[in-house]
Image: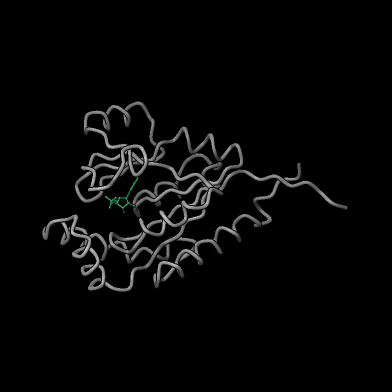
Length: 203
Ligand code: 5GP
């Protein structure tokens, strides 16, 4: 007997220390349209080439505070001295329609979603940690990127060392190798999560 199955959307969360290649990974994943990428709000300055509304919604601290007060964020956190927040409404709307969502957030944000008070969100979650090769390689990549000053790089490396301790909290860990390998592994995770029996609903 053939049955017709439906499912709610999956909330793919990816976290990785700065310079671990997560932006490149997310950009590569975004080339295929089988999920929606959630654009966060941030109070940091745009980097060269970043587009408002595509990479982030770049907003002032005042607007950020107002949106926190209005309860617009699913989670928000201070990272490297700036504020970052994930908008709740578009995520809930997509998940309810059965559309998968990818968010790129730090380890504090991932922890907040794991403990979220709505079970619908906790069930939707599939969290992935990208483990960078090592701190020296991270320093090389950040220096090569050239978007941060020496002091900012030092702050990011300190945060990275702290974040790298938290990989066990995630359902999946990808040990970062080449971009192609990382993308392939991420796609395997997406494939497996989409056929988890526990996610399927008989229509
Ligand atoms: P960057 O400034 O390099 O784009 O991002 C810095 C850090 O902020 C990264 O670890 C990134 O994952 C994190 N981040 C980006 N958006 C959000 C968000 O909406 N919430 C949280 N908690 N972290 C975010």
